[in-house]
Amino acid sequence: MREWRTFVSQFVIIAGLVICVPTLLRRLGLTGMSPAFLTFILIGAVLFWCETVRLRTRRKSIEETAGSFGFYPVDVSDLRLAIYPLRRAGTVRGAVRGNIRGLQTWLFDYEIPDGEDSYSQTVAAFFVANANLPIFELRPRGLMTRHVDRESQGDDCFESVHFDEVPSFEARFTLKSSAVEGVRRYFKSELLGTLLCLEDCRSVVQGHFTTLVFFAPGVKVPSADLEAFARRCSNVAYALFSSASVPSAP
Image 1: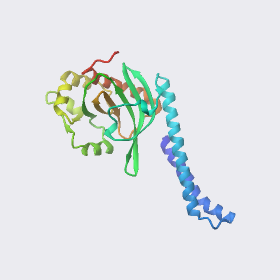
Image 2: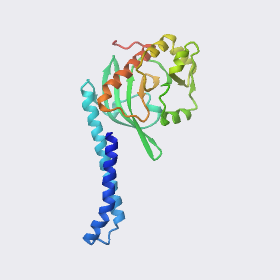
Image 3: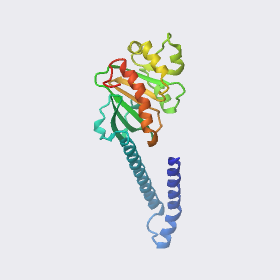
Image 4: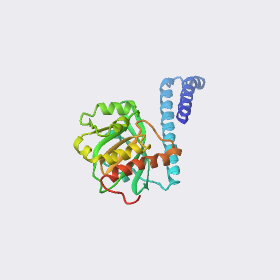
């Protein structure tokens, strides 16, 4: 709803500039200056200002909300993660750090360029130094977005991993990897059963050695829901990490 209000406000401002600037220039007798050129410059300035305000507001909201459950703002350099969403280069915004269930945890928005456009999602990232996760992508069935579908189709290195002995797992999740046999050894029946019992996995989960990242492509979590999002993801992360190395706290 807030994004719609921002869009409407920007539209109204731009429409006002398009209508008012040429009229104002004529009344001031500034016939030598191109109204179209000046309007273009002003629209660019307005859009830049609106985007700056939007990002600053979002960052402040994340920091204030995360502070209420023990997280604190960090610089981008603090994130030395082995993987980022969809394995794509992007921009980290509003990063905060904390600890949930003994896991080093970061929350941040991650903006990925997509041609002339871009899309962003809120990410929960977890790190355990002595873990040895396989490289994989775990996705709940029904979580369909054009972003993750396009990226998955374009990743020729990944193939689906099947667990015939646990058919109910494949009914709920899609698991892909570039190292199928390693994933089969890691995702033992006990882990599959644990994941099936959790009602918390509503995000794409990507693993890479020491790092897990959780996100719904193109979806930014409202600030008020950040703690619930982080704790929901931490339940799944704890189960996944525990198969290789038990975190330091329950």
